[in-house]
Image (cartoon, rainbow, N blue to C red; front, side, top):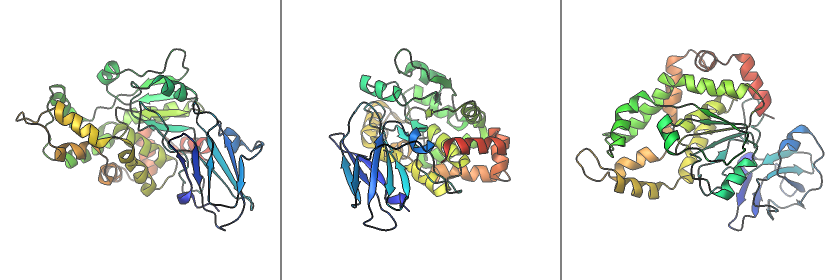
Length: 340
């Protein structure tokens, strides 16, 4: 067996790939395959010729085309296999764009790579970014930003893209007064960490119809999905947590995925920018102590969502059916489509 916790794909500065792995029996021969389409790895088709065969625990592979995304299939001499890809996509204009693939579900299957993505807004994509994203084959993009946000910074994917752009605005009730002040250039929060937990609880209490709509769109066909908001951390973070939860991923792994946002967003630069642009209610610059808890993600934020679900619903099945309009047949269809 491959130890999935020790299997990673890292893109180097020269855009070549460093692939690392660990098997149950160190030193056995591993064949590494590379493709820009992972479907063959899940459909049992001919893998072709490996790009490398080695007894080592890693391989540095040349990137044959920086304009597309690559996926890797590793097969040991004992027939064990694993599919790998980069978690974060190399985009200049959307630093928090990442793949939900590879996570293990409770039934032993894993999420397919290249099917379910999460990101920040798509209004600042560069021309190479746009071409890269379009080659992903996305069919459905769910935008959780408020309508005004969407109008001020519209999604930019170029002419002729085929993805369905679904506007699913999320506006937590607990943040209405906060947003009103924000439009005036004022950030007024007394307990920033508690404020973020309250927002996450409100996702469960008042925002479920939009997330339910996301799942119905997901069920409508064999979708390749991207969900996003502004930073890709709160509204999107909860949406991603719901998807992983419905597909059977353990809560600890969901929290770990949620926390990856802290690795990908330039928090210190954003704190510096907001501190210069906004004031508190007294007219003074907003301190980093207030801004940091609002701009980063913390385990207690997403756990507040799960706690609220447990508080309001008898079971996960009750939650899926009542809040997400997902019966057992719908959940099974999603698992069959996105797990392997």
